[in-house]
Image (cartoon, rainbow, N blue to C red):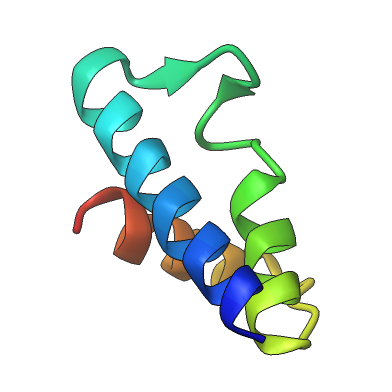
Length: 64
């Protein structure tokens, strides 16, 4: 759905910005935050649970 895609892009961009500026946001530390996996689930319909997959996704988004 276009709505989820727009939200995903906006929120992951916000995550990356706050990571670069402050190394975190009001939700907590980026290393343990569940927002990115949740947004990914809404965007793709897939749940990622493996720690290495979550870490790779976070690194991809936060360092973009």
